[in-house]
Image 1 (spheres, rainbow, N blue to C red):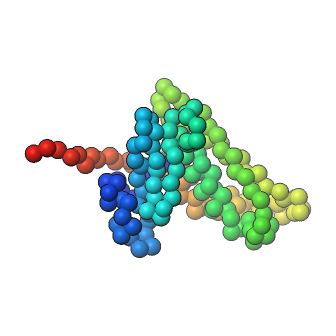
Image 2: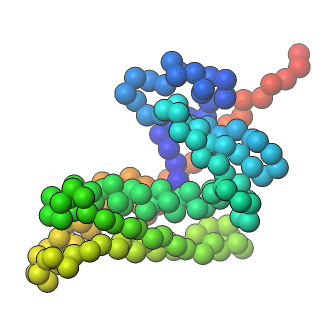
Image 3: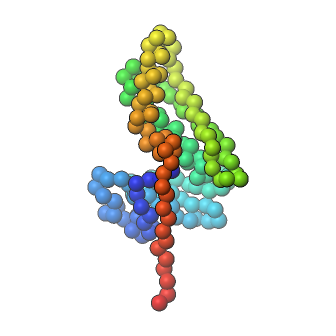
Length: 161
């Protein structure tokens, strides 16, 4: 998963003036221990990241999956709320085993759980088509995963001169 933001040293990233007004959030992670990091947003959000088996953290792969599920949910929110009402309940479960030999997730599976018992079968089918189209059209995370993305890495190194 790639974000529009660029790598920024923590000292600059933590400065709210560094984030553009109304623009994308500045994102960064800081190491807090062995294979343990805290992810930050210039909007003040934090997430704990670490190895599988560590209590209270998400792995990077889990965050990728959660981003996909959240993007699908947010992309479908408008058509679903129009038809089911603003207070509809939805759960999107996402899974996919890692191929550790190649260090990729070859397949991610989402299951969208919705109560559509109030709709007749034809209305339900129409709504599901509309929801799928909305997700295919505006879910940036899903579109990026399907298309692939160029990822670059650079280093900002302190040196003694």
